[in-house]
Image (cartoon, rainbow, N blue to C red; front, top):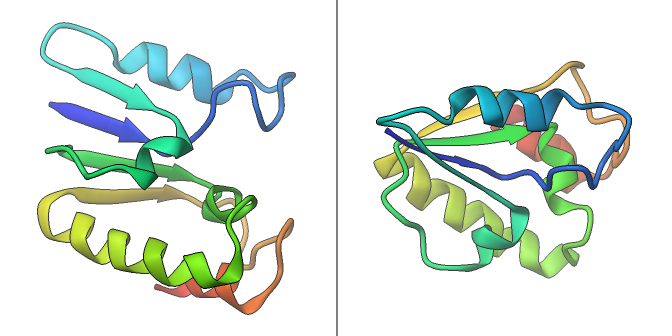
Length: 106
């Protein structure tokens, strides 16, 4: 299995070890894990699972016009990978614009 986590370890909340502990727990024989939001800017690999933790954080540093590029990337990824998101609330709480709300709905 090949897992990609669209998160930057230690970048969001250094005091919250959940993401790094979760990724370490996946790393075992037969399961390769990659992480880093920057990888979304490259050609998609043959990931089996693509994981997002609070999807609006993925778009924090992305300009509004680039959101369309990200949406197209997600549509392409959905054809080859399982998309998994951890969302702890019904609406984005850090970035509350329409593009962030769209990530929660779609």
